[in-house]
Length: 327
Ligand code: GTR
Image (cartoon, rainbow, N blue to C red; front, side):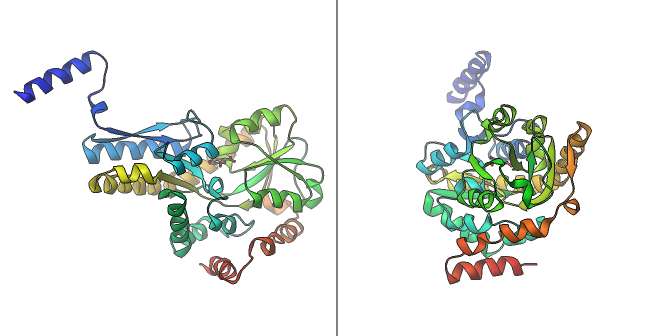
């Protein structure tokens, strides 16, 4: 009898355009990138996996394109428990997680594999512990490739080219210091404001990986992309402690598995998305300066002076040495 009634109610809900799954729990995931970005594809993949694993009892809604606000705001909301999940760059956590400062040091990683080995080891665990103290659970890391500078007037070929440049950076003391040491002026701006700032000449430069440079449209105004590859700070998927505690044991397991699977999925797609983005930039007339064409030794010598500012105690020194020694 109850089932017959339930059946009729579901039919009624469907007729009214209401989805039957709306009766299950739904988690919201904040994402600033638009559909088409490999991160959004991976999050959609995760949502699908979660639906399948829980028979739609637990669903994930990807709120892409910054609909729920910028990265800084999303991280704040996750910390305080007013947003379920956010996918942000780890830089957004820099003021709450001391380990992120070390990870953001320029020219730290030799390759993507190097970065992944570090994240999969003790250092990754340290980040997770620090995130938990801040009120969030780390579910997965995603690739973010390497970040390089792009400029509106001329390419970066040597240290001298930074002089007088107003360079947009993420809200991170490490990046601000980096630009300062290189001779430019750091300008902290949220990601969603960068395109207009480049167009209006408020800034002369910014820096990012190739997919973000292209999909954001920054390449339309900053026509010189100089591949110095100064940093490699990964993306992270976090859930608020409050939302995590509201899930059953089985739901947590399903969510964790879906998140891990999406990270593996994304790692496979990332390399290709970088190649495609760079190819598109070239096709659209961007002047790409290869690393071999940049006087890197001068730039790196200045940049690594930051290490002594941010490595302030013996354990951190050990940590950075362990990162550098990681194969
Ligand atoms: C992108 C990253 C975003 C955001 C952005 C930025 O590479 O995926 O989450 O951090 O950089 O520069 O603000």
